[in-house]
Amino acid sequence: MTPPPPVSDAADPIEALIAQMARLPGLGPRSARRLVLHLIRKRSQTMTPLARALAQVAETARACRICGNVSMAETCPVCADPRRATGELCVVEDVSDLWAMERGGAYRGRYHVLGGTLSALDAIGPEELRLPDLAERVRAEGITEVILALNPTVDGQTTAHYIAELLEPTGVRLSALAQGVPLGGELDYLDDGTIMAALRARKPL
Amino acid sequence: MTPPPPVSDAADPIEALIAQMARLPGLGPRSARRLVLHLIRKRSQTMTPLARALAQVAETARACRICGNVSMAETCPVCADPRRATGELCVVEDVSDLWAMERGGAYRGRYHVLGGTLSALDAIGPEELRLPDLAERVRAEGITEVILALNPTVDGQTTAHYIAELLEPTGVRLSALAQGVPLGGELDYLDDGTIMAALRARKPL
Image 1 (tube, rainbow over the protein chains, first blue to last red):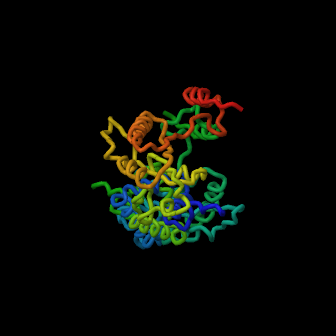
Image 2 (image 1 turned 60 degrees about the horizontal axis):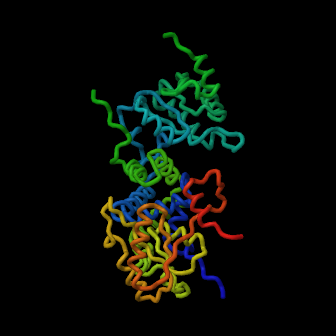
């Protein structure tokens, strides 16, 4: 007698949905199963609207043609807002960094999303990023200051140096986010590099 | 001058999608943002198929009319499989428990999903669960053994006692999952209750 086939075959749409969910970042088989059961239970309130929202965003979302932010229109809400034409341009690696800056709520200018960092290891050169566009924008949009909000990694800092050289001919003012002790951070839990950076950049009271 | 509105307003479909995702169990705002960005980046390979799979399951999934498992058909694959009409019925609290039993792969009979446990606190009585159906099935399907796979909680054990009384007139054989040391479990990390239960149920070598 051949053993009966397992119930959880991928031909079953529920199993297929769980498998799809389980491949998403931050989810695994267990959380995917829990999610799918939750969704099936709250079908009309949760699952159907979620399916619709996903389909709508999948169909319409694109990169903003100016800054590279994700957007439902050709131009993202930040670039489309005339009050944000402040002459400042904040360079970030990724859309998630742009969102983090927006949550901070302190920055009122526009952005430029590189789409990554230069990386010799991963063979990512300036042409793979939106670096040529950056020089072009600085010239064309009357930018007065470029704020580098790149991550304090080797690749991030390499990219910052490249941008500094790239923009030197334009004479634009360049700055970078301050490094130091994070708000609410306890010295005892900070890495040595951060403490050294904060000490070097100490400010008179 | 009025401050400009935040970019992250819920009118934006991307923001609305993130908000919907963030309300799902196991996800929060941060993981929802990460997920949505990932999905937008892998739009055609991931996001569109996921939206379709969700819509399909949302439209079709239902409770199996026999056992209460979630299913794309009126009868779930387990109930529809004639090889599983073994005369054994495994009673579980929830569909997730049924799935866990199926992953174990050792059980070859059919299931009965209660949909919860009796609970005085939450005012859940036998009528809220599939308990009347259970007695009916035992009588109608020629069941020889009912295996209780309920969780070792107060409510789970209350429900087990109720089922024992409910099924007494039918004369069906009743059993429950063994309690003891889990495979791969280290004694040092086990709770005292489990160790006591394992000692009481010790078996001759």
